[in-house]
Length: 343
Image 1: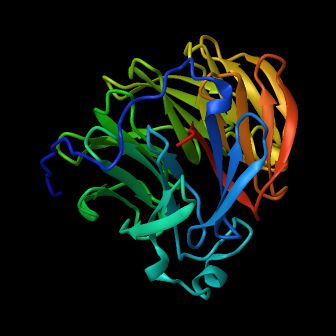
Image 2 (image 1 turned 45 degrees about the vertical axis):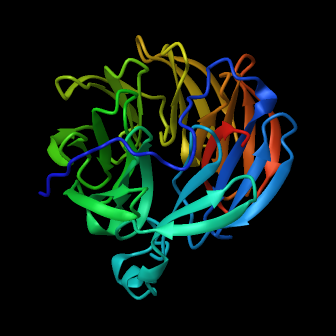
């Protein structure tokens, strides 16, 4: 593995973190539309679609800069191969390697600025805003790439479990976790060296990751295992595995600001549930659109948003009542969803 030296970078935007008490009308919601190759930008107060921005093929994972001025989106020229398609049929489909990258969007002008290199078939990624390094899951390459935003170059690659998907850094930025769907594991990347610290076995087909605000615990959604794995970050130990109700297919995750409730999007089960992290009990459940995958929360913690692929819409869930209060039509097959401050 290549070892990299990390230095703080002066990126072209402010790195002021959004306060937890942000006023609701001061944020926007971004949804990546995998089949229409664009991103919908939704006003957090009115739920109106403010703009639709073309970004490239198969947009999926996304992140917004802390000041809201830039949106980054993983785009991919790899063909869609759903679980119902056999490997031989998938291999016959055209692959456009030139389409792979991390698209950068100016959120004020609503225009695509550039597409940065990412490695093969980027799916999800996370950004260490203090160093300007992006950690990308390259699904078809079975590795994670580390991209330097300022230089626009890949600095290193790290082998992962087969078909990596979810990527997340804890608030302290000490590690990057990458889920391996086929190997049912999590690769731990040391962000100080850009090398692997090993892998942690979890449940079947891990998809998404979220960390506690103190960076001590990580929660992993095991889709086929219908469970949530709880990992102690300091020891890379699975402390608990909470079984979810029968029929659950956990995918996207969000943790409440008080670290007491884990919100889980259940994909083809069509539900979003609120789980008590202390004992794994389900406190509330609501039916969203068809196949809620991406899940995001408003800056003030009062609303949840789900990207519902087959429904071509985004559900808005009021956390207090745990009911769907709005449904926002977007592009074709929304995959990911994220919130950020208005630029």
